[in-house]
Length: 185
Image 1: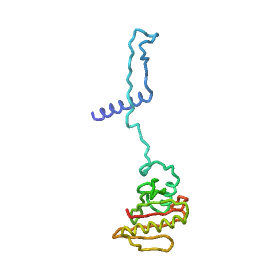
Image 2 (image 1 turned 180 degrees about the vertical axis):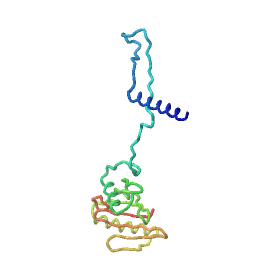
Image 3 (image 1 turned 30 degrees about the vertical axis):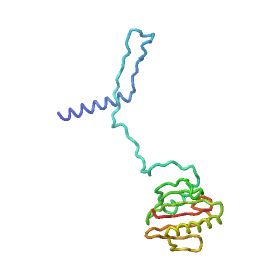
Image 4 (image 1 turned 90 degrees about the horizontal axis):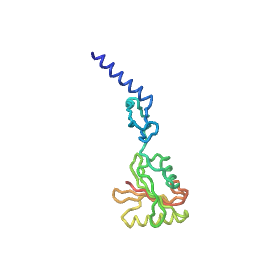
């Protein structure tokens, strides 16, 4: 008896698939049809294909989709960090910092997460002068210089907070001189 029920269910499913595969039969639903003015429109029903026939393609796992940046500096900065083994936590966005064009984002590596601010300048001389100015501002806020390699690259700390300030002839893949501020996130 169980086999007969299974066979009947299987037959109905196959019949539904066959009807679904042949397509819909349509009728002319226009009541003003001059070729058949006395008959009412007739609706026909067809079985929908079984859900078992729908097979979604498996997509490869991806990261959360994000809009492709149109600013080449954002692309350059993010590619620079990724090429050095960092993961982008918060994508970079264009902003201003002390009236200068800047880019901010968050990256991480095996040691932790870092807020990055890349501030563009017109020349390398302006970048080095601005780096010195930023170090003075940080010192005024209670930071001490832990490392000064003599090449406009500084490590500062205040308690358990560490920050880095550096002047670059090309800051993080932007193609422009500038100053980078790196702070623990």
